[in-house]
Length: 146
Image (cartoon, rainbow, N blue to C red):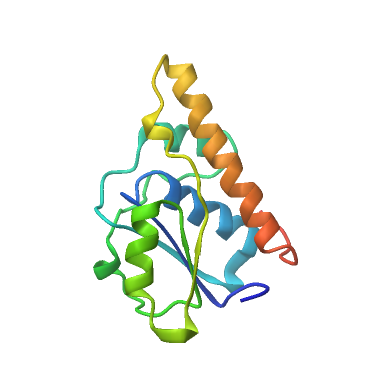
């Protein structure tokens, strides 16, 4: 699939860090013309470090409610972007036939970082910036809103 999809799902392991960040970044970049959602294999509360690094760029993900593929209200997406290997496996089985494209963006899991608070924040910023760069490259014709 080239260009912008009409419906886009970001998926990661817990729907607590990478996919909520991707959802917020894509909404900013793509605007309301694309339906955007996110899911995880096993849901967990949004990570406070993810909230902090998104706040730094003016995006608030505090209200994000993690959910699994089975909990999604929309059952069909044009594009599913998996941000972890296990989400990629889940997305391929969830994809609704040949109409759905599944892509894998290998974004490092910042929750695996250790060290001081600042060192951990650096890992989360790197993941955030990686997702933002990939989003802008993947959807180059989108006009930035916000």
